[in-house]
Amino acid sequence: QVQVVESGGGLVQAGGSLRVSCVASGRILNIDGMGWFRQSPGKQRDLVATITRGGNTNYVDSVKGRFTISRDNAKNTVTLQMNSLKPEDTAVYYCNADVTTTMGFRSTYWGQGTQVTVSS
Image (cartoon, rainbow, N blue to C red; front, side):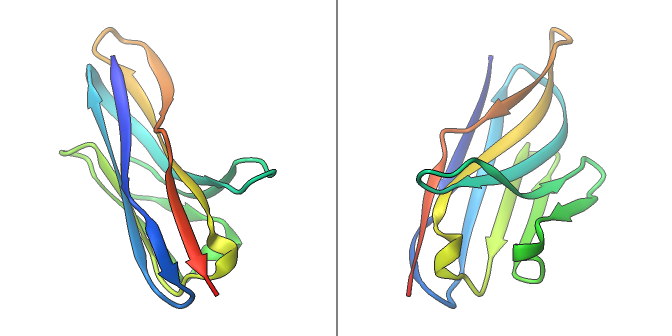
């Protein structure tokens, strides 16, 4: 009923920039929080940044000043602009969205992930 699809990512040298985007579609009545998480091989999935419907943002300390999260409520999209990338930013990046469906059910939906690789 609800799909979350990421795009962007890829391979970049350290110090470079990348942008990952995510769109939620389907039987959506409302989206509250949206966010980006990342997971490296053998590690747990960790929070990167979140944004509320009203635009309040939260970042993990390691990306503050380098990453910027933004969203377009009309288009159900969220974007993560990543600057000054470091090799340790290499991971699969996942988008999630707290969705209330047209049937009135609320749940968190995840995308399939997009790979970001930063070479040294």
